[in-house]
Length: 361
Ligand code: SF4
Image (cartoon, rainbow, N blue to C red; front, top):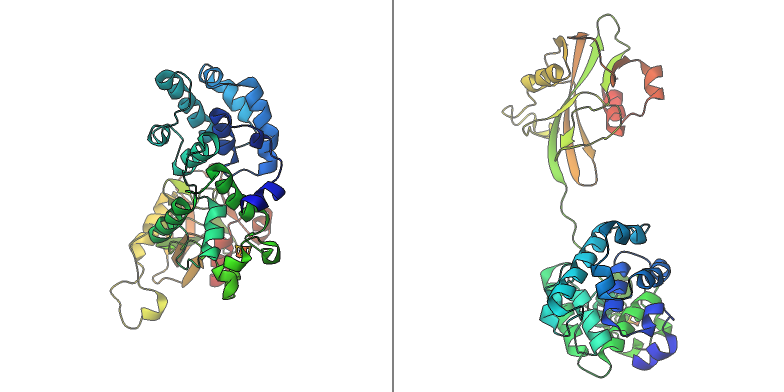
């Protein structure tokens, strides 16, 4: 691996230095950011703030302006805070002691290990996305990424392997292998220096590994929605820009027009109707939806339709009600209107609203 690294590593600017502060900056910048982008920002940042003392003494606005374009500004704020702490506690010298480094703001296990191994040549392990992918394949780790059993195993392997010579280059060689050869899609196993040791290649499971992070099941949410027609105008429906479908304080369909909606208590899914009448959608809920929208009118006795709608994190069960002869209790403010089909085509309307309107005809 070390030989392969020496011959194949990309000539990145921070590979020219062992200065722990400079390495620290490069590692923070490289989180969630492409190496090519970091290559442009890192020299500029180091030119303006060549030492911990320079960064520690800077105004936050200037630090953020040099970070501008890299995104994830929290990283820059934590780096700045970390520099101040290193200045205050260690006289501007990044500590060689791993535990002291780990205690600094914005420095997690990975960053601490990268600085320790690259700058101080200490046998400190790193596990990032590249290492996780290479090791999952090399050692046939079949548990999902992110699971504690997987994380534990990855760190164990990394800690055992970093004990040899040139720990900084060793760590970087695995990351570089992940970036150049053992890529997420179509890895170049034929060019891989460890192909003869690779368990996944041996049993043909390279494409299956690593096992992706288990996704959280979507949350089940129950909604009551009212399609409200104004008096004498059955072709028009009431729409509003903030339709009340709020979860966690955020409008579910931010900025789009929708039917008045409210989250309600659970009711049985449609297929259970015949078995149970105890948890049917409640008419009072729909009345509350009408009231909340500032409307009054005749709500039909039964719920008109029951539909399902799946979003990335939520599975919605929706009870759709119809109200006729609807009048607003006060003149409609901006962002609320009775709209016919032609008008609807001109508005930005949430997909769910279109689905509801299509369902009840
Ligand atoms: Fe990755 Fe293929 Fe090398 Fe195995 S042989 S480590 S899967 S590139």
